[in-house]
Image (cartoon, rainbow, N blue to C red; front, side, top):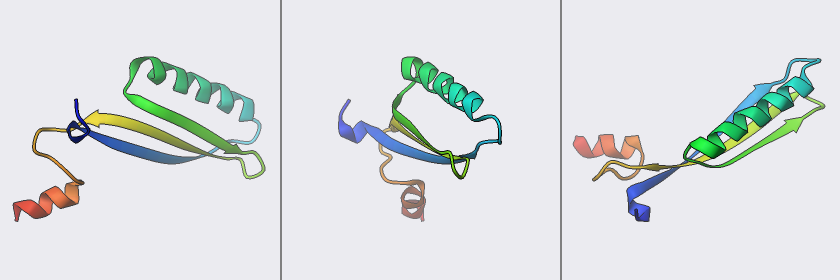
Length: 82
């Protein structure tokens, strides 16, 4: 597979951690990271927890195959059909 046959997707999420559940949250994140690392197309995952604000920011990077002939984002493809 060449670089033209795949797309890189970066997802960013923000999660609020409920007071009193920080350790449970950390354990849940560890479980959520382990499974896809062994079974999925995810290349990277990182979660940063701001304990003072009780917010977590997660980043997930995926490599996905693209369909033949599709390049760019959906807005670019849609505009080409017009």
